[in-house]
Structure formats: C-alpha cells, structure tokens
Length: 147
Image (tube, rainbow, N blue to C red):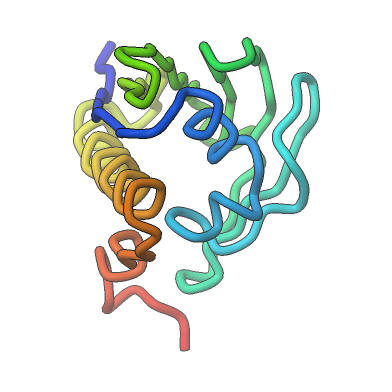
C-alpha cells in the first residue's frame, strides 16, 4: 500500500507548531481557507478550500498534545488517514512529519498527496517563522480556482 510522506523542520516551539494545525484561525493563513472549528478528538470538522470550491470532513481519530494528530478525511467516498508527528529538536525547533495512507486511487493518489503535503509544510514554515502568507496552496493550481 502506498504511503505519502513529507517532512520539514519548523523553527518554532512545538506548542506553536502543533496549535497551528489544531486552530483553523491559524491554519487558514497557510493551508485551507476556512475551518468550522478547532480540531478535536472524536469530532468531525469541515475544512474548506474556497478558492477551489472543495471541502473535506476531518475526523479527529487521535490527538496527543504536541506529539501527534491523526485524522481520517475524504470519507465516506474516498477515506484515507493523515498523521502528523511533532518532534522537538531544540526549544525553538520542531521537526514535523506528515504521512497519508489508505488510498483507493493507488500510487497516483499517493504522489499527489506527497506533493500537497510538501506544499503544506513549506507554507506552514513560511507563515510560522516569518509571518508571511506564501499562497503556496492557492498558487499550486491557479487554473483550478473557482472565480
């Protein structure tokens, strides 16, 4: 079974990096455009990419504060699991790894997911380290935007 994987060092404390994926008020600066509410264990939360006219439901399967986030998304039609792990490397450095698996679309879906999560982590790094909204997700597929 193919597994998509991306990883990146973020030069911010683990508490800040972890919270940036839990709190949609932060995440919307670098990934999705709108989240219904903070991600929680056992809750299904809607995430929107309004620029593309798409959304998903993120189902919080496991959340370990400052260590791990596991969600299922794209269900029930095309569910897969996404796991972020957070490793403190220094008081102001966090190594983030994201894995996505359980694809119904096989290798092509895993390749696309790897590309997408690489953009996510790069955008997160720009935003958290420098306060810049890099628009990597927005600019990834400009022809797919909804106008």
